[in-house]
Image 1 (tube, helix red, strand yellow):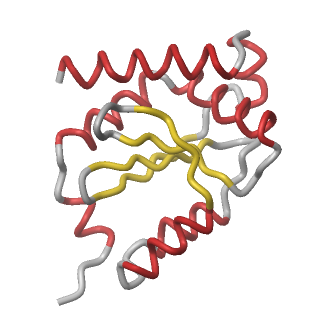
Image 2 (cartoon, one colour):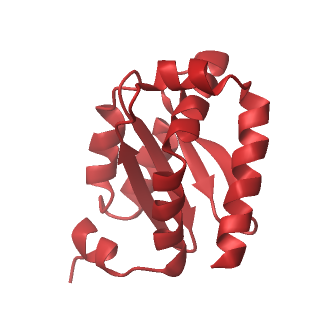
Length: 143
């Protein structure tokens, strides 16, 4: 029996809920980080990712890697591939959470838009990475 994405989403692992809550609580800084990385790396093809194991940390995921993974799982991630291809980084943030045997797509439209979030936060990419990774680790440890 084939499993579709909505069925996968229904099986909530604790890390998935933690990641969703973390993203909601840190939208402005995540938007700033996403925009800052995009400007620094000059690569519109990469997506911000959060790898939950062994210790939560930020990673960059190429669209090519996401497409490869999709083909390895019989196109179960086709919806994710579509979202990634059609993202508008000047208005929205797309993050892929990577957990044990699962992924979680996080997408939101921050207010203000990502470029303004980056300006308002007033921190460089390395500072944002360190700050958000530390906050995420503390958030996950609290459960």
